[in-house]
Length: 298
Image (tube, rainbow, N blue to C red):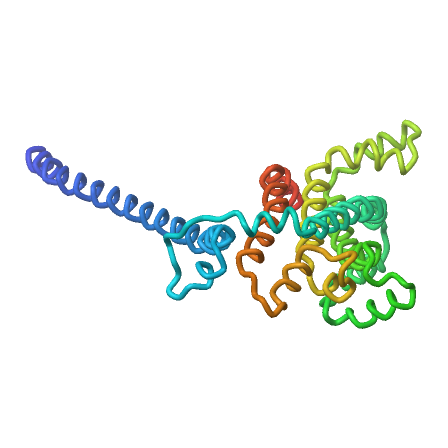
């Protein structure tokens, strides 16, 4: 059977426009998918950021403008709500929240690091049960334990004190920190620890110089999560405090519960309350991502 070079050449020439059309169609499809993805991301950002923007703008309105129906997009900005924040003694709850959250970071990490390392290196059938028991204390909802916690703090004479809020938050943050650090330490290569032990280092020195430095991104991530959880916690802080040790979430709730509903002041306090957490997460977001993903990768 004889081949037909001329016919093969004509077929190749005819197939070129079809191939070009297929390439153009595939390129249009990829661009459409990319535009659809961008449109989805823009819509998602608007959905997430619009309430925050509206809250921030409302802090510069008068009470009439903030509660107007339909909402007023054009208004004369005023600093009255922010002046109340800085002059009416409202800054004290911010200081309390910073103190409670910072204390939780220091105490929780100080207790969680050696505990998590010991659990990570523990061998035996009871290890998983012990680790699960530690985490199970974090699973209890705050409103489920608020009554016994309130009774205990009242018997100790700690109601409406910063120590009471700090201890209550620590009871929830410590198991969470132990669990995350323990799972991370389990994936660290043991060669560095074994070399340090051979050189005569103690277990404390191994933890300090061989375990914590490579785990620093995870430690920073856990510290930020503890800060955010303690900063945003409401139920325990609202029940355990009244005036002297009030945190920011409890302050916002008390403002909303008054007869004169000062919406611009609530918006100003809420906007100020979000700033520290957002700023902290923005500054160390690289460490958070690194710490929370390294354990899974390893």
